[in-house]
Length: 316
Image (cartoon, rainbow, N blue to C red; front, side):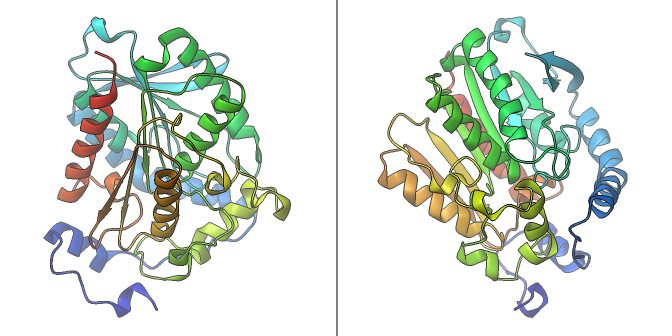
């Protein structure tokens, strides 16, 4: 089944319907470094100028900083108040572990920064295949461990999208193993939690943006250094981890056309049955990380709900 075989959902916004109608054909990404680098460049040239203009329109500012030896893009709200210096949202961008950047995700981090009134720290973690698993987890752990020790767990939030959701979970699972405190809450946007492609939605070709065949399988091979032994490692595929009530309150968002819908469903079920305070928001007719697209009204609504959830759990 292809996305063109389905009628447009009549219940979603016209903007979302137009997005599905006008989505360009997906291209298969070869498992080759030159092809991956070309895809990164294409994304930067295609999205970045528009993203930067949108972020500027919201009045946020951003600057590269160093946290415990790791590069981080610090996104500051338009009306930032110094009373919030001791609070932060640690954010991990998406891109299948092979592409993406903090700048490309300003469409998500900028509105969240403004809504929360705190700085968003978007970690510039190392990408694969140049830096395969567990390089990104090791890098992210250095940032998280420093922040939770300096800010305190009740003042720290964690969020991530797609591969960034994978990395957010992997970072928290690693922190738990090391005896570090959990953050106040976490939000996961279309998280990729099973790199082995075992979720039902991985095989259903209705996402207008991505699929396992177009990018997912190549991304998995690159991230795991083409080593199938890591497919069920709980730090590489957090669906295989053990969860309990010590894990932070978690919000998961996805859509019925998200090719990772199954990952979100499986994760929320596992967390719920393990005693985690978890909430799953499934948006009708929408696709993978639809929150990335500010022209979609549902994206703005979802980001408002994500911000409200995180704010409710942040220490006053």
